[in-house]
Image 1 (cartoon, helix red, strand yellow):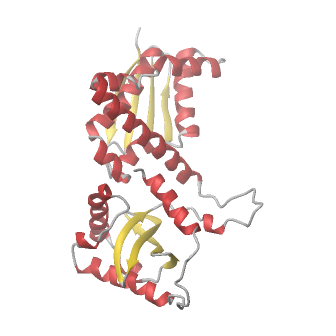
Image 2 (cartoon, one colour):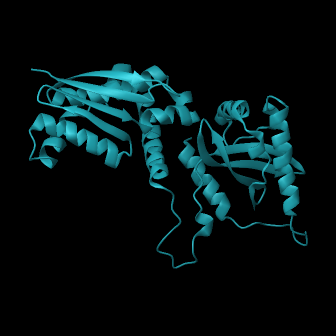
Length: 299
């Protein structure tokens, strides 16, 4: 189950009406805030108890506990002590709060299941789409998120599907067949030389790759060198960032195989365009946080 899909579940929950038992008074907001305070106290006390986790899907229990442990190790508790934004939706209560980790700030949505006076930690999400603020119908515009978040959602949705297909192909046809299914070099080079017709084809391929990765994929791309005999492109990709950020990917594919998919794609594209390719990785913060693609003319 992808993080994007789980985000959509949260959206659906946020759009649902709050149903109170007939004649029962509305639940005081202070009661909900007490859940957050007890959760923060448990986080401060030590390793968060697995028995207090009741995820949407059982396969997420381990990754969620891992994320909580990582957050606890890096927490600035003054941030956690601030009162969060509280949203009660049926038996769920969501807390939205900004937190800083590794020098980066993001708004996190912590979701808890509250039943019979007992709470359980359910989910943690760094994507929250405020569709609860959608204007009444007929509506033609909808609350949005920034371009980086949309790029993340697109890439996560795409690569979650690709990894699932890879695993199915590997099971039925073998691993080599599954890796070969990612080879799209001939079509990619055709797009480059027909959509960028006013540049020599090998150079057009390099320029198109930079444009496609930066403007369609949302990656950070630097064209370091471009010549007739060699070219160099530096990238920081959502592809590798997803492997660190999305718990389900690490459960479904080994990093070595995930990286091999990336290399299979780019080596085949380089081959089609008449380049030989070497790839170098940087590992600041997480594996393959940066990659350098060095192209050398093959003939």
